View 1 (tube, rainbow, N blue to C red):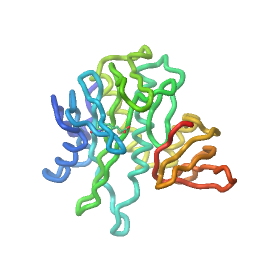
View 2 (view 1 turned 90 degrees about the vertical axis):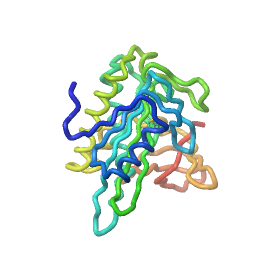
View 3 (view 1 turned 45 degrees about the vertical axis):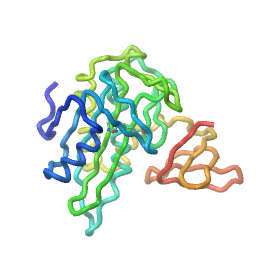
Length: 248
Ligand code: BTN
């Protein structure tokens, strides 16, 4: 499948982090929106919360520059929406490349799980400088899953899916472009609609770390802005914009 011509691709053998390389390109060489960085392996792959993202050959390490629109002189608040677009793209990719998978879920805001185990992670980083942009970084465990993570992990191959990283690259790139365009033309609610029914632990007790004090309560759903709604044990309702969910 040829890469859509709207993308500009930098395909690399080894790099520290595709996110860092995408940021470097965006800052130094004025790389256009939809500049993609794809590496065979990363020597310093990063996850959220400063976690290391193990990146040997056999998995997909994909980052994309998205230039952010300015609204009234301010950067439009689309970084969270890009997280959902990325999650929806990964879901579409897993469905295409591992069609036997039945138990697919998204841990808010954007970890993709198969059978409760993490299969893909997403790291969106924004630069709100003079030429604002975001880098959407996605790691998909295609042929290999780490066994030293603080959470269970799995890969597509373990669920009858492909081991072909180039196929995963093609599928993810096509799916991300679809959701990028949907975000622009139809808005964030249209993107989130494709994630309905996929939220892990909906209606169950979860822990959310969003500040100094962890919050524990029932995950009641998302509000119209994609924020997580939590019913605390004392009956109060809290909405969380940025945070990490832990299963209790
Ligand atoms: C997470 O779940 O904590 C996010 C993991 C994001 C990993 C990807 S791999 C491609 C890109 N480059 C990085 O250094 N990180 C992201």
